Image 1 (tube, helix red, strand yellow):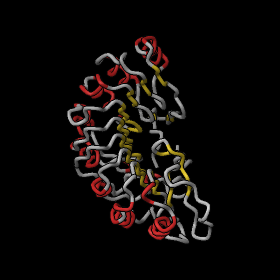
Image 2 (cartoon, rainbow, N blue to C red; image 1 turned 135 degrees about the vertical axis):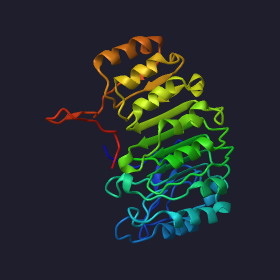
Image 3 (cartoon, rainbow, N blue to C red; image 1 turned 180 degrees about the vertical axis):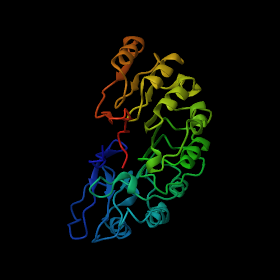
Length: 319
């Protein structure tokens, strides 16, 4: 599966594309009514992202803007968004109401998720201490050294492969307000070199006292993740546990069922899996019958078997 659709909303606000350089800007909507998507172009860009952003700041009352979506920047397959980060940091005084920011909202026609170059994005969180939601798409070159942020409630990192350094940085960060954490761990083929042990600071929950929604998904090591989650202290306070989109087999699901009870959850999301019907029935009998919403949609998780017996399984989003 690839990313075929742009974000349609951010911070509970519908997304709105800021018009290109040749379009009218005298009939724009109210600044606080939408999540504004600002884009340049990946190929033969008519306007660079920083130019589009400067134009946005000229015609929109930025003091009322609550959510920004960073779309395509020029040659994202070859260039990181350092200039984007610098522009947003420099403009921080102009966005006192900004509460949500997403960097890298590109679809497959613009740039494959694992081709999107990223950089250290923590300067954005430092510059905007009142941000409540922060998201990024693309793991190549992404850095996230440990930091403290007291307002952030939702953190999302979408990648075909999330570097272990980033996973460890998230785990070492002090995020006392964080309620929703979504990490697409990915595969080593696309830079996802973390191990289950790297998740221990997250699974301990020590720095995440308000966490209620934990998604550790799109992982090639989903069985090991499930086994680690089975005894994780943070699980007892969760409402939603999401281990979807990865290579989850009977081994991982059995380890999950053998661990602590999950019947306190509101939802267990395991869609895109490689579970036998027998194991799915066990999950339904053990968890679903207790009132937990369980997503066991196999989705497009089809196996491929070669003549020599080798079986190939894939995460939902790779390249």
